[in-house]
Length: 395
Image (cartoon, rainbow, N blue to C red; front, side, top):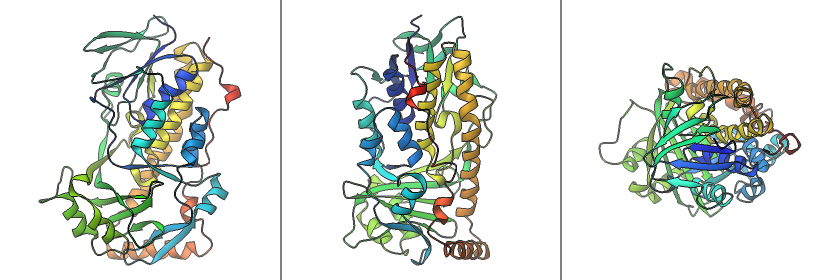
């Protein structure tokens, strides 16, 4: 066994971040991706200060911050345009050390790939876990090209992770949350607007600027699992949101029906007993899939990657390194999964009295200052990664 070899199953945001972090510590890393090419979906991702600080560990934090487009006011609105709560990039920076950075997923993937040597990422390969290994024998990953032995295997293969099922076959896995999401990227409308998230009755819409001048918009609505529009998803969005405040109608008018993405939201309300077994660790959605209501799915995957590399570099015994990783990450991510589910229930209230009470309480509390929206991220966006001084290289 090569004692410095790591195999990452899945080339998503978490898997690529882990690959970069391990490579910088001296590991020989291979990333196995079943897709034929790395072509991220046409959607944005919000990186909060917690994940920006994690990216500082691998030298990419400042490059991400340069892509920040949110400079002014923002907050929460009602469908008729009323502001329920206001905040700003300045307030976010004062509270957490930086604002939210919205960027296209393809941009983030390109940044991560640029930090890896050529040939590390191998696409078009379906990988499965053949043996998790232990302190005395390597883990084994099976591919169509043969088996690969590794000192460390990372399952970063998403919400329907085959690595997770191999490690914990009796865990119930992800569950449908009760709502679906849409995402679209369009040119900016002619009339200006403030970044916002708008809460309606059983529906939500968000509009955020990207640095390149485009707009990332997302929507949520309660729906049966597996449902689809009878015509196309742009038409469905028009039915649900077409009469909401500016800039929602302009964004929908600019959307290409073929570019509207729709996905049911699944999450894992029952936490795993651990994020590891043998020489194998799980990260991101494979470990703790969460609702997108806090915008923390990708952020937590990036945190996972940096913390895992930290422990893998400090402790030569995989049993101890990965147990420390589980101890660090399982309580934090379990709490965030549960909080995201609570926010999801609040967001998608549909009964008129409940919606009116919710909106009234938000508006009343917001009068005390611009921090209402931000306070929900206390304990999340203020997280800090292990310091560089605590991260010795693998020897």
